Length: 488
Ligand code: FRU
Image (cartoon, rainbow, N blue to C red; front, side):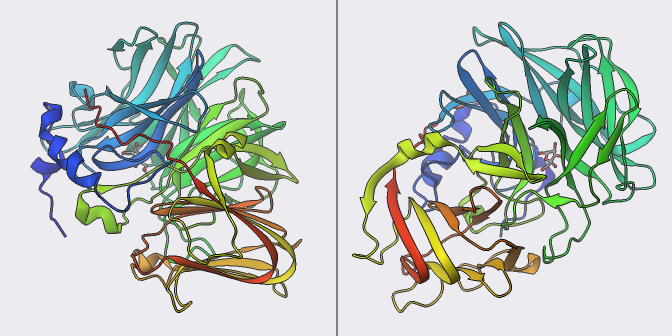
């Protein structure tokens, strides 16, 4: 495994030609995705600035051009008309000022009539490597020009250097703008600090720390916070770090949410019960970002990084890593967030395959399973002798579903645990699998639970096996991302 020096990781990209050969090499990889946004070269992590504006969805990602390493971060820009097919647009925010000299870190977007404002964290480091985060602003005009404005404010002295990932929120009730920012208190507790202004672009001041009742001591840093209003609830989404959760193996960084009520006047979030809900039960999901739905204020669309901090993936040696999850529509049902694949994904269905006639599993496909009850065992990417693969089991006595990736040839991040289980008190009735060349997303019971995971099947792992009282539908899916080299 390559050891990166600081100079290599934080090298500034001067010309696209420096990474063109890398791109040409990695697009040969067997694991390049066909309908998930993935890094043009190097590493992709968080989705950023997800927004609908003037008929187009904009979605950016954290990008380090040089390889599968967290180094100098840029915002890479992709666009879509339908949230299904995506086009690369190129680099949008470069870390080229003193305020963001060591990275343009995560953030969010605010659409206006004829432009979009992008709020992000400028990761400044002094010569001695002391970190000073700035909350920065970019104006992206419809004509395509991108202008960096002066940073809105610097670090808050009362918290540690860990202050980042501004989410912009406009409160229609009181006409104020809020920036909610992930932070760490000096006694190392994760929290959210809030700034406010009457204007989106100036006069920002510190409003206070968000009181999240019952979560005063929950992990040592909260990354990527957001408050969404969905089906009449306020949903606080965030990523607590360095904390273990039951059923999550050795993982210490999580993506989850609390359902409750946000009091913007007093900056208090009151969860309606005491549980932190995991957003995604799979192995690889983090740093979710939501876009408001332009037609329905009670819905939002969520996308996450299909990866984890401090984790390694088999494509690291090919010098690229990371992709985003499919966008998912959010609703609240029975006081839980429901995540459903978008209807538009049906456009990707190409050829319907009769599962009675073959046990070969296409590398890019959708599978739907309707259960008539009882236990189920499913192996995706099993070997020819029926062994191995990603094993999905539903145990009707225990009423729980489990995914297990320990039997695949390429195992990775094993110390985080190789099984994930989710109780299904009402049983299993429906599964939808979205399989791409190196990932699987499983939507359980119509969005009741989602499992997102990277998997890296080898050539001999190409079958599927199903044991249960079920009907199965299988479609090959079309390509929806163009793996083209647009870096300028
Ligand atoms: C989460 C995160 C953010 C930060 C970004 C840097 O994965 O650590 O907190 O802004 O990644 O790439």
